[in-house]
Length: 276
Figure 1 (cartoon, rainbow, N blue to C red):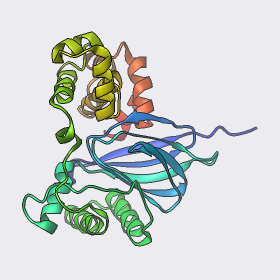
Figure 2: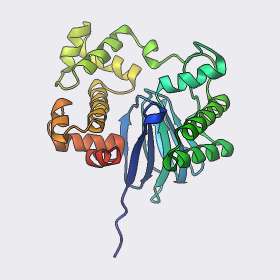
Figure 3: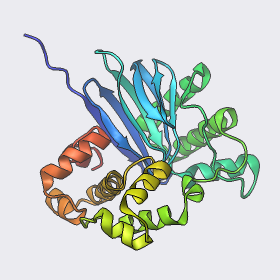
Figure 4: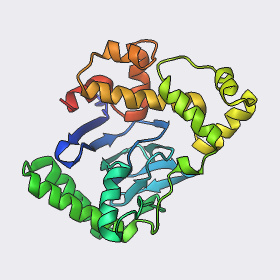
């Protein structure tokens, strides 16, 4: 009898590090839909290899490589072979990395930008793995905070882009930002493309193309991302999944379940257990 392979993912939050999100995952069948994170993704491939989209092209990250996705950058992910892949990652927010960057380059140095989606750096891969282990097993706040800052400082020194990072929002037309703000403020509503077009006084088809070009996602997909981000916060606060589905604009709990799994690689129920 062939044993069915299961995908596993464990999320946790380091409150002593400002609510830093951590992930330890092993995937075989998971295919992430294109989405964005509020934070950066910095991860190490422990086994197998992952293929993911970033900045208009696909990249392959083999075992022992480091994967990098900047905050608010569209990406996806899936396995390259039948053996799947496992990795550990952290998701520091831009504000978290800005504090580290200021220590290196002084006040107003901006947020670092990671140009390369895949990095081959055995030294930093080992340091990141040691940090993941420490954050998993140590309960000493001073030790955890000190080592995290040490590793992040070294990482930015070796691989962070120089100069101030200009978030994607600063490069987008005011029209696109207005639409993003509207979707954020009405994420639980079924907004039509015609409504958005009227809001910014543009042709609906032109607006759709403009939004896709600057954001990397169509308006509806971006709204789903916002809904999942809000759902994550409500789950961590202990709200009921049925209430969360209604509050974030999903048709029902199964609708939330389906989109949450495609973006997070884990069901809302398992995410609740992992964060409580």
